[in-house]
Amino acid sequence: MYDAIVVGARCAGSPTAMLLARAGHRVLLLDRAAFPSDTLSTHLIHQPGVAALARWGLLDAVRSSGCPPVERVRYRVADVRLDGRARGVDGQRAAYAPRRHVLDTLLVRAATAAGAELREHSRITGLLRDDTGRVIGVEGDHQGRPFTETARLVIGADGMRSTVARLAGAPYTVHDPKLTCAYYSYWTDVPVAGLELHERAGAWVAAVPTHDDATLVLTYFPQDDFRRIRADAGRAHLCQVHATAPELGERLLDGHQVERLRGTGDQANFFRQAVGPGWTLAGDAGHHKDSITARGISDAFTQAESLVRHVNDPLTGDPALLDDALRRYARDRDTALTPGYQATLDVARLAPPPDQRLALLRAVQDDPELTSIYFDIVAGIGTTSDLLTPKLLATL
Image (cartoon, rainbow, N blue to C red):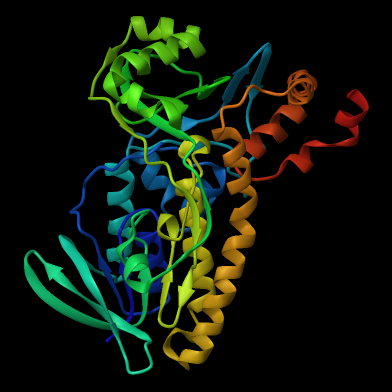
């Protein structure tokens, strides 16, 4: 019997398996893919996620992989021009935007180095239950061969379309409509000064440096336009850049697109019930929001740490104590992630920026300290209330 079976080995699953294994638990880590492999992603790890990598001793590996630090942010909306950097958290002021085939492989290797057993090309088809209905393991197939494994806890970290959530019957506790569709491409010879964000009514464009001297360019459109956009996504992607971020569009004319365009219209917004007897969800399996604020990776890291902190001691003891710990994890998850969820929905509506917000940003742009606080908010370090300092209120 394993102490924990973690289903899904990307940004939520591998850190969870790693932290549990480092704590001395016997962990099985399952994934349908093999590594290295890619997945849809905004790539960006905000400073809270970078701080987690530093705590785990993995930040140097990200740096040595050739991923450049994102030291500064440039934000454009209407006549507002914000340039600066976040104050950061735990001494980490830079963000990073690694390619996922690099980051996820690094995380998987950290989990196995800690002692977790990795089983690639594995999918689960059912949850094992005891006579009381408590989940006690999984059944599935590994490279076409059926298997069953038992564990004290099954952790679903298998993404937005989580099989564990479906098999456990985890209902939505919050569910909002999809708001955007998104496309992204990779370019060489397109210099960017850190993270660039460009906003206008009905549109959002971002650019950030990543591996191999490439720049990731992302465009967001209203969900209602998805069918139209999908019919000629490449043209729509470039037109959105030129219309929303003309300076970036000019740089693209001198650059070279190096990979195919990727995109999705399936930007779900929800919380699922996070726990039940013998099972729990982490990362996108339990909570997903529009990628426009790029909070997913950092949130996955935060949930991994929170889950392990709650279950570490009771995992090998009384199941009732484990269930109590899981319920505390669920409450903490919702408390921690709800403000960012609501903020993301506000951005993803792609509504015209209200005059009051523009007035606030005009006051912020003239003050480096307030600009840093604002970029903390972008990174998920603080909330808008942190910006309402006496200095800003006096200016307004």
